[in-house]
Image (cartoon, rainbow, N blue to C red):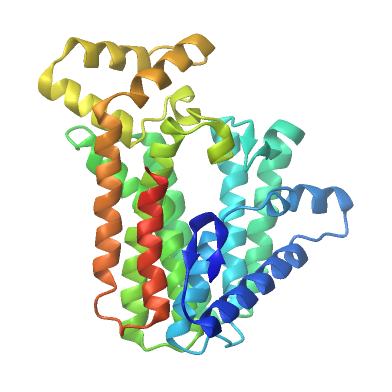
Length: 336
């Protein structure tokens, strides 16, 4: 029984499969409805990434977390639409910051329409998410606002870099907790909260989501180096080209400082050079793909996924819990 193709997630319980599939279909319909505008151009821009597809990782988590209460409660699907709209909005903004040309296997919005349209379309999606959120009650608004503050703070901290004396790896993991972990945690929180699950269950699932979100982003860091565009749907090495040090690069620098190996130092120098040059960029990717730092980043991904799995221990055993455990395995598998 396949619940969601991109992760290969399967369950033995037909009722759970049917319920989650129905919820995901309703979310897809909600996303199309929420991105409609009286202005056709805005509709086209807002639906650009919606129609490009995607894993719908966050809505899936909402649906699975809702299984610990009433999965058909009226707030479940709208809250899943909110988290996906928020995620999509950040992608429009991220692609402008990264000057990315490809997203989900199609031209990025900024490549197609320019930076201004991409930024404003992201803002439009935030506005639509807020409109839906307003109907879910003040507690939902507060939870989303706190998560969004953490998300933006994480992005700012990434841009600013670590303070003097701060370990760059620790700083980066804090950044990921804000940038990615916060919204994944809210996905789990909303699913449990909207379904009326017990507060202790809500807290457990929130902690799980936080750790899984970091593991998910670390897997993306590995994919950005290790995969080609057909596999990831994005331009490989985008962060390298923009001079953004993700975990594989940070682990390389850590190793170079510790061991002082000439080949590590040379690779660090290459990464610090102008990687807008296609030849240098290709060489940096080739060397990083063969470097032990990439394997270390994979091990870090596994560690966070295992922490997410451990966080689920207090929950009763059921098919929904088993599916959440499988997602930990799926995230690790993405990282190779």
